[in-house]
Image (tube, rainbow, N blue to C red; front, side, top):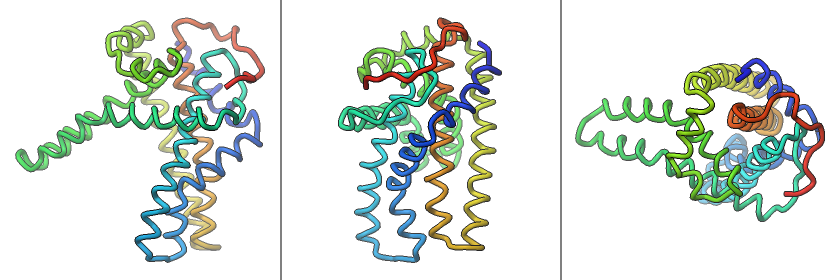
Length: 247
């Protein structure tokens, strides 16, 4: 696996189409509508709860677009996919949520057990989450690679065989490098958000973070997930240069 190629390609990928970049930013912004509302100083908890539900439903579209990114990348395309087939995109997003929750259930159970075993349960839960995140990433890619069948994300034998083919060390290297990059991106985003909130408005800061920073992070992440997943099969020179026209 050429980690340098994967990182470089994924860093440039979000910039391949500014229109689609901003569309995803708008979707993510509306998925954060409750946070924006809170930034206004509002304290209507009923409305905040309703906006949180709305944000989750809109957020499913963002997750669904991430699936499209993985799908088009696995197909060999190097530009952002189109925004179409919205209902399918929404359902794909729900699948991503289900897969993530499914893999994180052990962490929830470990935290719940803290009633019996104390604070060590929280530490164990955090360690589990750290370890399972790259597996979740490959599980989502495996699901997408198998016609978005939800059951494929839980075929542990196939997923671990795929990771073995990629190389566990390669996956760990990608995970560490990506983790560092995402921390840097997130830190810069939070810093800019705080600076704008202090100098201009907390509402402006709350809007710009999901509108401009989060789309880049998500596009980078899911592009790199797809490239890692197929790194044992498709050589760099076989990537195409135009996005798929179908969903």
